[in-house]
Amino acid sequence: MINSNDLKLTVIGTDISRQGSDALVLGLFKQENGVAIAASPFSAEMTRAVEASLASINATGKADELLLLPPVAETKAKVMAFTGLGVADDASLDDELLRRAAGSAARQLSNVSTAVFSLPAETTARVSAVAEGIALGAYRYENYRAASKSSKPTLSEAQIATERSADKDLVEVLKHAAAIGRAVRGTRDLINAPANELYPESFASAVKEYAKSLPLKVTVYDEKKLAKDGFGGLLGVGGGSNRPPRLVKVEYAPAKAAKHLALVGKGITFDTGGISIKPASGMHAMKSDMSGAAAVFQSICAVAELGLDVKVTAWLCLAENMPGGKATRPGDVITMYGGKTVEVLNTDAEGRLVMGDGLVAASEEHPDVVIDIATLTGAQMLALGLRTAGVMGTESVRDALIEASNTVGELAWPMPIPEQLRPSLDSEVADLANIGERMGGMMTAAAFLQEFVGEVDGQQIPWAHIDFAGPAFNEGSAWGYTPKNGTGSQVRTLVQYAATLAG
Image (cartoon, rainbow, N blue to C red):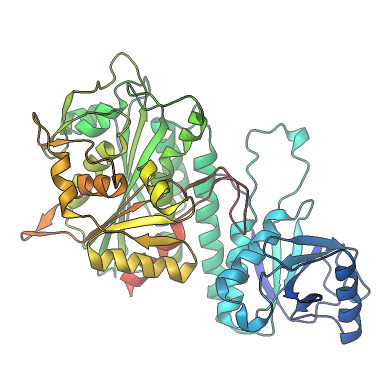
C-alpha cells in the first residue's frame, strides 16, 4: 500500500567532469536574449557554446521548463537536462524556487535512474532545498499498472554537486530531506490508492505494517470498541457501508520529550455524500477524502525517523461514507464521543463528525497542542483556491503553523473563526447541527470543530484546524515538485511545527 521506491541522496564536489550518470541536471536563468546556465560546471568557452545551443531551441528559463541536450565533452552523463529557475539571476533565486526547479526536473526526467544535480548549492540552505526538491519530485504512482507497461525507471539515486561536499553538517541535511521525501511520497501512495483497496480496515492494517520499523505504538479501535465507548460520529458516518469504521491511534513518545502534540486527521476513505449524495461528476476524486489521516500518519513517521524530542499522538478517523440501508439520514440525531448530540442536516458534511470524535479523544490526554487537518469544505477552495490551505484556531498555534509553512515552502493562509457564525450551528433538537451559515462555510466548519476541543483547568487546549481540500489532491497539471493526484501537502508543515515545538 505504501511502497514508493526509496531514493539515495549524496553530495559530491563541483568537478563533475568524470562523474557518470544517466543525466546531468543544470539550472537556467531567464535573460533578455536567451538564457544563462546557473553555477555552470563547464569552462567559460563550453558554457557559451551550450547557452548558444539552448538559445537556438528557444529555451526561456521559465519555471517547469525542462529541456534535454546531448552531452558535451566536459561531462560523462548520458544526457544534459536543463531546468528553468524562473528568475533572471542568483540574487532573485530563493530556496523555494530552487526546491521547485530541482523537483520539477526530478519529476519530469524519464528513463533515468541516476542523476547529478549541478544547481546553485553553495550554502547549507541551498543544498537542503535541492535535496528536498529531488526527494519530493522523484515520484511516480504505478502500483496498478501491468509490469510490461512500467518500463520507465524512477529516479533512485541523485548526487548534488556542491563546493561544501566535505561539510559534516550535510549528513543531517540529507537525512532530513530523505525522511521528508519518504513521508510525502508515502502520503501520496495512500491518497492515490483506489477505495476498493484502501478502506478503514485495510488502512489500519497498512498503518500497523508500516509502523513496525519505527518507534511507534499503534492501537486500532474496531467497530465493537467504537460502539462500546460511544464514538457516534464515526459510527454514524460509517453506518451505511459494509466496511465498518476504525479509529487508529499512533503514538511516538521519546524519553526526553517536554511537549505533547496531538494530530487528528480526517480519513474518509471514500465519500459519496451518503444519503445527501454528491453529483456523479468528479466523484472518483473522493477517494482522496482521507488525505488528512494520511498526512498525520506520515508526519508522525517522519518525526519518529528524525528522532525529534516531542511526544506526538496521531488520531486517524477512518470511515467510508456510503448511502446504505443503515446510513445516517438527514434529520437524525447522533451522540458524539464525549456526549454532545448533533442533528445531521446534511450527510455530506460528514468529515466534521468523525473529526469531532477524534478531537474529544485527543483532548482527553491533555496535550499541549491539538492540530486537526482535513479535506473538509468546498468553501476552502472558493476562498483560497486550489493550492493554499486555510488555517484557523488559537492565534498562537495558527500563526506558528503559518510560519512553519512559510519556512518549508508550502502555501497556507490564516483565517478567523468569526463569533457570529457559531449561532448558525444551533439545532432545534440537539446540542449542535452539523451545518450552519453557508457563506464562509470553511470558517463555520471550524466553529463546529472548536466545540469538540477539550479544556485543561478551564482553558481550551491550544488548537488549530487546517482545511486543505484544494491542496491535498491536484486534478490539474503537475507543477514544480507537485504531481497530479495526491500531493502530500502539509506533511512538511506539520513536521516543521513539531520540530519547533521540540525546540
